[in-house]
Length: 142
Image (cartoon, rainbow, N blue to C red; front, side, top):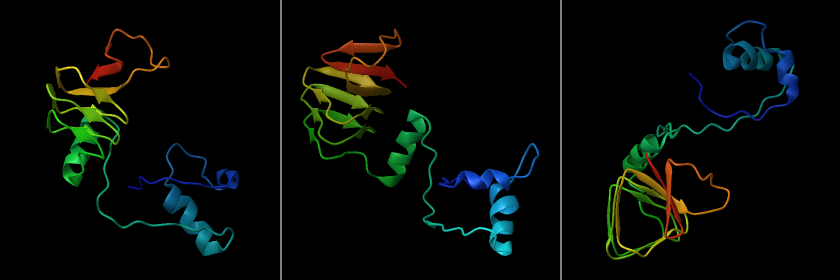
């Protein structure tokens, strides 16, 4: 199974077979290269560490595996099994467990959070009841 990204010309659509399911690599790229009809360049990264990070839980699992959980931030509180991005401040009295803290978040007031994504509040974040807003932060349960 191929799970990479493609950056291709719209000409590629001329070569995709008219069927419900098509293997882009096997049905399109390989025949084009063999026939010399098109030139294909590729960057291949054979690093075996590929992760599906499509959900917050999978993102946390990938971060755990890579061991890169804390960015360039100041941590004075208790942070367990959480990802903290750069330029954050986690103050004394703050306890985080299995959380994702995004860039530039400042948590100065004591609070305890578990299984949450925390980011700076912004007018573009929908005022949805599933989010909690306090102390300039937007908090979503995961």
